Length: 96
Length: 245
Image (cartoon, rainbow over all chains, first blue to last red; front, side, top):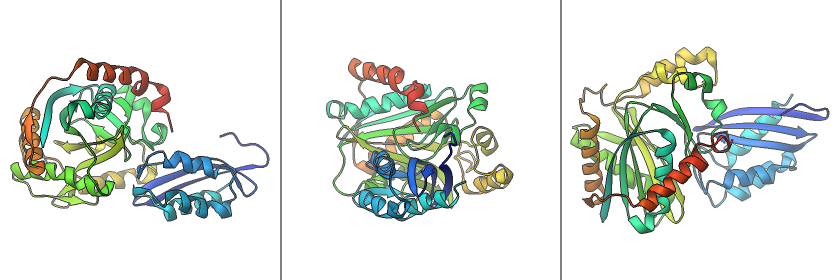
């Protein structure tokens, strides 16, 4: 991700049983781009792409609510709504 | 239950993952199937959600002739060299996905029992012996079926593994190697001398006991092989899939 004026980038490697890595780009307090990777398991698997899609354009204060809503009917190992929300928040805190 | 067993050889990584997926796609035609295989050349498979560049020293792996492949299952990067890998396709049992891991892992627990080793479940998807990990397992549900694959470590070289994998903090690499050495074991470390084919037979027997299955062998149809070849070329071997995340 190229740094452009007005944008900030944030990363987090969040350990939650498994590793959740966040690479994100922010514009003010909104998520512009986000990529979630790691060695966790989640069912159905396309949940993660769905979360990425829904977080694009979302305000950082709404992250937890969005993630809670999407993950409520999923099964997982090494990730859950709380840890994923915390990982995104950590990336936000770490932004340059 | 009737369980088809495929005593397979050691194959290239793209083929291994392609055939597992093709078996899953054809579950309705072939019925419950257990495949026992290995990897040649050695390979690193990464989990579905991982980024290749973040996990693997790609240049080093290429230089050493180590295959790289992305799995359709979650979990972490695995260095496949001295191991037996199993894959099983089944109709999904009722209940939670996470509960079905143990049902299948029982096949491995029984296999270790035949080898005279008392193995235990560790978390949802690992198996340990004397408190050390000896097997990792990963499952997915697709095409109306369940695929679980996993490994039995026959031997392990943690230094070699970490020469190919990236670690979050290079400064702590030595410490990490030491810690992994303390947490991982293999049949060889446990003093079990068994060759690949013997182990295939033992694991087939372990699954037979765990699932109360009748085992049979039957050649795979041309259609399954054809689909696997298609997946090998058009999915697993593509940059698009490998660098998906």
